[in-house]
Image (cartoon, rainbow, N blue to C red; front, side, top):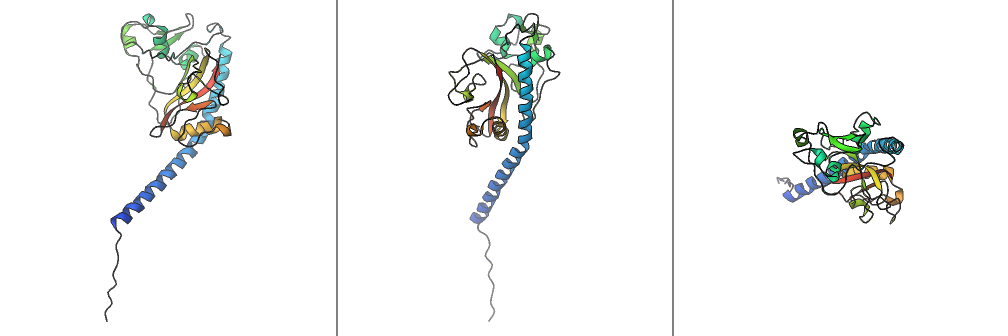
Length: 249
């Protein structure tokens, strides 16, 4: 009797199931690798933040500061004009176009912009500068063509300062509120300085929170970070804006 061995092939459902499992496992592996790579980067960012905070506190004694920190991002929704002179713009307009790093460069507090490579867009050149004598932000030169070349949207990581808004929860306050412990906001009407990382990957945000915040305030994966020197809203599509507290006055 001739026995014919029958071989059974894989069904389409079985193949798709295996492919799905492999995809999930690869996703977990890639996320784990990303977190491991971001850990030393987060530590370096926090060390640099402490340096910035010390420099800013010392700057309060500089003649051009006159004991008061300048506001470099008003949060009032003003945009940089695309014509005319910047000097004719409102304070909110000028605040919106300038970063605190520009002030620090003008005051010779730092030698260059600090860049953190995590996939964010490259820093374009800004035409807004800090005038130590007048303690204001100006274009250089303040001509229509110069003002027109200033980017209307500022999207790269930078240092900013604004008036605190303790009425808004920390993760939604865009740097205008921080809590050291749950429920205790920054005082109202103080200038808070922070380092902003727009559209940061979730792995980078969580690495920063893990390195900076107390263990009891570290958020669950994918959740908002609401208490500590690092705050951010819940990531959307794996991205979130991160705010790192430096100091306030």
